[in-house]
Image (tube, rainbow, N blue to C red; front, side, top):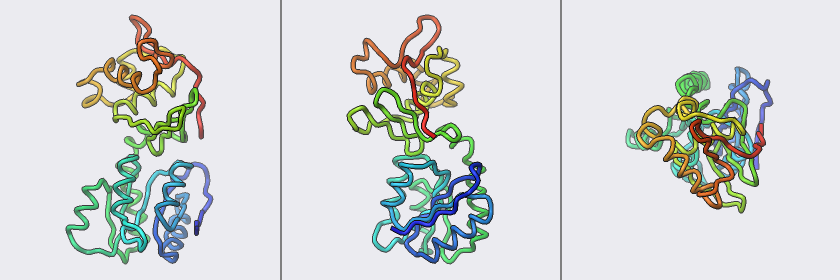
Length: 248
């Protein structure tokens, strides 16, 4: 497995480039690394998923024309599992391919051959647009929370149970769980949960905080009627009732 890493200062955004052409990987890593980014360049989807599970990544640059893999399938899987900003690279010029990539959830699209300077500008633009959303989905610098054998990976948006199962979460459930895990043993009112989760419309107001908490209990608790994690503080709100480890 050929992985090129440019180690940066801690404050730099982490860009993951996926391309099976070693010259393109090197060119992206060198150019972006000389500016303001920490760059990791890998050759295939397996290396991409391994890195995403292990490290915080701020944006993915993905080649759709990988020789041994379907780049569209990788993009679809990435978008199903996370909200990480995505820029697609491809040699395809057809409008249908560009539309398909954007409909899969890509934030931008660049056709080969491309200028590294243009890629840099597009990365900066996407990060500026997506920064509030990314911070909402992952508190800055935090990779995961662990509690009582459970793990919530904020980068991939995966919740793993005590027995190793992946537990699916809606956007509202994911955002509320992040708030609870970031403030264990602290009583949070319903208004605070709405504000801190930043989901002011679809998931919270329409379905109510109470419904979201009830659904989370159904996924987390052995006995939702006698919760250990998500405790009701009568007249005050809710509290996450056990210690939480923060993984950076």
